Image (cartoon, rainbow, N blue to C red):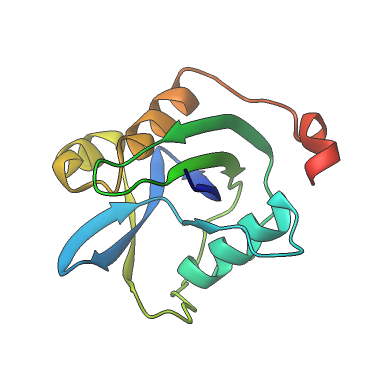
Length: 149
């Protein structure tokens, strides 16, 4: 069994969440900015890189939401996903993907209700779980990941 280490960013500003629109296998999917940890990267380095590539935003995480396991039905791989919180105090301003892979089509700022309307098109159930965990008040201190940061 293959295990893949991934990171995801829950970016929140005034009741809206940053979502990226991707094309995967010819279908449009919605996800938080997310991706794989590359060799030599810490979790936070990977998260900040992925956030910048997929949204053009340069931010630092304020907390983390924990780790989740996910095994899609169409692969033998298991994904270990670390989700980070980015709370914006100021408007995000104009930003665009800097995606070297070219699979991010657009960035959207949606409310939970707007995301719910697209729930069938979310990349994985972890996207919704991450939003629910955030709205339930989950905030873990970044220093708890110190050995991995």
